[in-house]
Length: 618
Image (cartoon, rainbow, N blue to C red):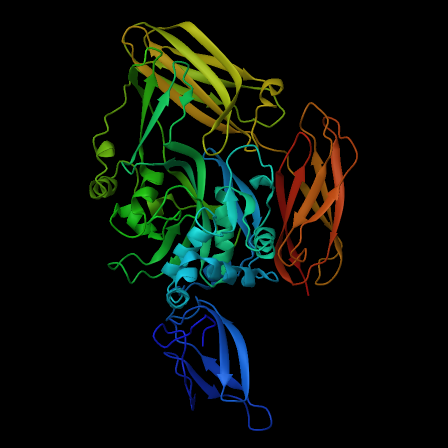
């Protein structure tokens, strides 16, 4: 019987069965499989739809045994069955991976240690289920519901955040991380889940979207559900379900804060399962989002929703289809808020839902899965999906004004610590001479669109353009100005605002750039074998025009560091262009391909990530 307060036949949490000659895979059954003698070997089989969790097996009056039952994606009768062995290795068995951050022009791979098979992690995952409010209200019904991966995924979506319950993570999207650590400091899920479990289910401080998604992925894989982390670049956050993001700017082109936002990127998870609760055609990947954004049925959770439903514009399908559809398809309307209180519509080409990405099966390359969420732009299938979704703004969207064209161009080398130019490019496609005002500014910005400090600005009152002419206006970004303004995301928002004096038309161009951190070089010293001590030699060159102090390297890796984060602090001051180097020793416990995740911190250069794949021999 299942270990819940009141196991019952009614909820399917208790079953009685006799020994049989053969195993019956459709129900609870048992058969003797060992040879005759003093020892008896029993084979126990559960039905494919048995609830997951802890069980106690009682053999008459002679013995009691405890075991844990998980979803089985290798079993054809299980709702999470996946028939591709390489995919199962990636989405269930793999304990490390890559999460894509940066921006859509430069997706940056961030290594992550999922660690779902590390000591104590499965216990923490089962405790998450037992702490959810549905279990606390009605344990029997909740335990029975755990036969259904749809139900379990929805519970996890709510429990990975702590907004309504004793969930795992507390989110924070400001630079003040007092009482906890920056979300950027995490290298894996193991430390987070261990901290939550050891500290009486108090929320771990702090998480942001990729951390929420990564922890949900770890828990899902631990429970046997194939799962992957997905990144949606230029992700819309639609708060009123009208599929439109309304943005306001001031007369300098700077955004005025509103609830509707476009995040530079946003991460969620996809889980693989059947959807017998829906009409046919919606089995497979289901999107769910543990980041607390909007409430669903009164709780901060989102999904699971079939990815196919998003692509087809089927917004009546459970769960939370309109919100996820808007994240990848919302229209963006921009208005200028003038000093006199009036507003004026602004022409702005704004993209949403770009380069939807996940890690490739079997390697660390990026797989673009945008086609799973959206039909090609402008296609008949796309228009049909918008009709189903009643996405009138997209259907009625007019061609942009082609008279004056405004874009932002950047250079290829934009590294933290360097000075570089960015350009506003204005083209006059009309037969008339044009006189315009051009405002070109830059501001630090967090990945979820919150603005920071000014990084450079210019206001040209008289930009003259001949018919067919082009003007290229540079803006110099100096480290002395942007260095202290950058957030941990290394993002700068570039905005160019063009006002035609003749027609009074207003055109806005916006582009976010990400400044690359230096590379951490990782060298493994020693022969990589199980239970043999190795050293990771870590090297980083200071790219900044100022010294680094309080330098610290740390490493973590599934089956490499014993479920711990290993740290080496350095007392030396590292001047501009100099190298900082450290050795950290570790002992692998299991053979196979492993990922050693590395993090570097200092007073001026924070949360630089790196990794090295290591093949551990027997």
